[in-house]
Image (cartoon, rainbow, N blue to C red; front, side, top):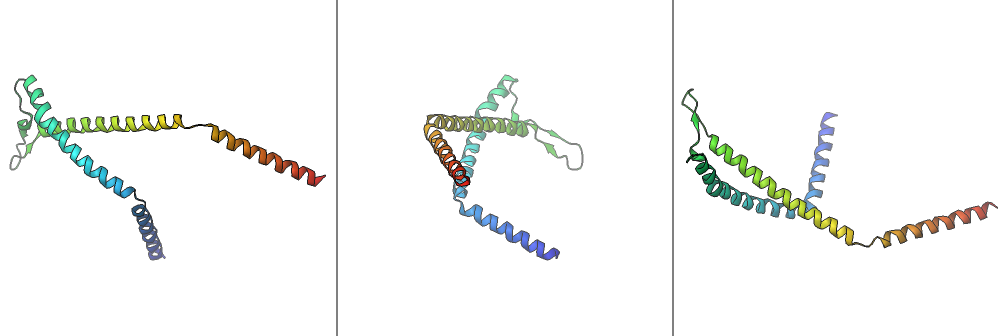
Length: 144
């Protein structure tokens, strides 16, 4: 019985996966991943080669890449605090850029929705009400 459930689960899972692949959004997602990877490389370069040297200069010539300390255990592993701080700054810049892109797309979609005429919807509702009224009147006439 348990094996049949497992087979059913995997069959459903594979069916959902096939449906997901067939949608066409997979290509859009793949393009997004590739562009996102390229964008991340640009942001990494911005942080490592432009921002961090300025921050280091402001803090008295500190080189963030060399900001690290050794742990006095075993073979003295090194904790690279500077690389971690660079990664945090890279994440914040990337997240801010994604936020701006999403905000712009949402604004365009909202503007597009405002530009669409609402009269068509009102006409459809009015036609539906008229049809329902006609059906009601016919049913009343049938009862009499």
